[in-house]
Amino acid sequence: MTTLTLVRRIAARPLIVFDALTTPDGIAWWWGPDDGPVLLAETDIRVGGRFRVRFRMLDGSEHESRGQYLEVDKPNRLVMSWRWHRGGEPEETGEESRLEIDLRPITTGTELTFTHARLQTEVSRHSHEQGWNGALDKLVRHFAGDRI
Image (cartoon, rainbow, N blue to C red; front, top):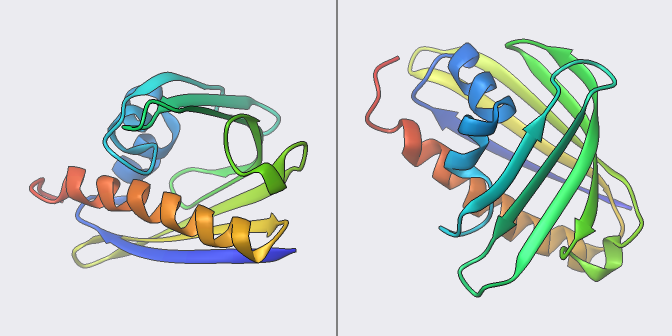
């Protein structure tokens, strides 16, 4: 198994970023690797609560992930299980991985550290790296003009 870690600086307070990570409206701004739409976002933000997100990529393919919230420490940390339900990487079919998101206040807003752990292969890690980089870049752009 392998792990991917990405770091971004976002021009918004941790509480605002946390809400963008956990509310259906917030998820619609950034989820997915390209500018394709989020088709469905359901969240139940509590330990044991579940999430489900379906998105369409610009090439027309649809992907859906589901999971359970394992740790919720608003606005500092979010940990959840992750499983592809539709689309995604073939190496990950039927497998559960883990997302950890840490938010730290900085002068310009928030430093977000995003870790996707328990990925099955390096090929899958590379694919997820491309996907999450695209999604997190959209999140950064969303807040680029906003005040802290």
